[in-house]
Amino acid sequence: MHRVTRRGDQVAIKDPAGNYCARFTIFYVGMNFELQDGNGHCLRANSASQVKIESGGGCNASDLNEQWYSYNCNSFSCNYVNVGRNAYLKTNGTSSGDLVYVGFMPGGYFRWDFD
Image (tube, rainbow, N blue to C red; front, side, top):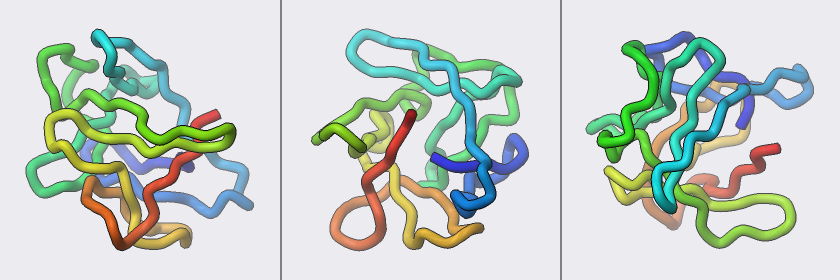
């Protein structure tokens, strides 16, 4: 995933040519995981199907909207599913500024490369 916006804002992708990236620490919750940025804020899906960097504290293991699991992985990328929304991490475009959502196939882009 590429660069994200300020906490509380919806996550957007950034042109990979800009050499930006988002750094997350992975916390495992059973078979699922949570993604926390360097400032201690969690990546979560909200009820409007937006993916945001939480403006509150760190990840909460009991909040299913902050939990993810990988699906259908190959050597390069995976699909990621939000546990609470039961929907894929997706974007509708690959251009800088395109927003990140959770949603369903078909339509949009669903494969993510987390290094």
